Image (cartoon, rainbow, N blue to C red; front, side, top):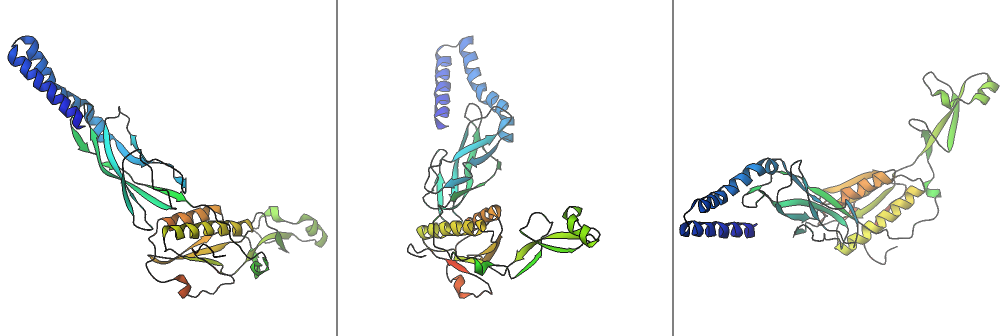
Length: 308
C-alpha cells in the first residue's frame, strides 16, 4: 500500500502548493477535503477492519505432485477492505518451512501434512493509508496424499482365519450366526421363527464376528522425502488390500513422539491414521523392529525401492 500513500502525499503536496499560489475559497476547500479524506476512510473502514477474519485456503487433500495454489480467504459481512499477508507453511514430519505469498504454489513434490499459518497479516482502510494487524486468524492443515504403490502380499488368507467367534455388538449383518435360546431383551428381529416352531421354544440367530489376534503393520517414520513417499504409498495400498478382505489391523509407527498406534477397521479410520502420521515429527534414531510384539501376523513397511 506504499503506492497509495505516495499518491496521497503527492496530491496533498499539490493541494498545498495550489493553496499557497491561489488563496481563494476553492483552494481552501480542496485542501481541507484532502486532509479529511484519510479520517473519513478510517471511520468508514474501522468496523470491517475489526470484524474481519482471515485464514489460508486450498484444497484439503492434494495428490502428490499436483499443482495447488495457496490463497487468502477473508470472512466479513462488511465490504472487504484491502488485505496483505504472507503464509508460513510448515511440514510437521520434517520440520521444513516455506514463506509463500497468496497465489503461489504449495510444496507438493512429496507427500505429508502442510500446516499453514498467516505471517504478519495486515488489514488497511478503504483508501489504503492506515493499517492494523488482523487479530482474528486461523490456521489450516492441508494433506499432500501419496500415490498408492502396488506391492506383493501373501495371497493365502488362511493365516487370517478367526481363532474364535464372538457376538457382533449391535447385531446386524454377518456371514456366520450362532443359534441360541431367546433371552428377554434380545432383538426380536433375530428370532428364528421356523426353528422356534419346531422346537417349541423361541430360538435366536445371533450374528457372530471373527476374533483375531493382533495384526500390526509397522513402519519407521524416518528417511528421505522420497523414502517416505514409498512408505506411505505402500501403507496405503496394503491397508486398502487388507480392508477389502475384511481384515482389521493396527498401524504401529516409530515417530519422534515414540511408538504410536492406530486401529484400522475401515477406510475412514485408515484416512485418520495417515492424517495423524502426516502431522507427526519423524523419528531421529532407532527402529520399531527393535521392539517385539505378540502378533499372529506382522508386516514391516520399508522405503527401499526394490523391497517387496
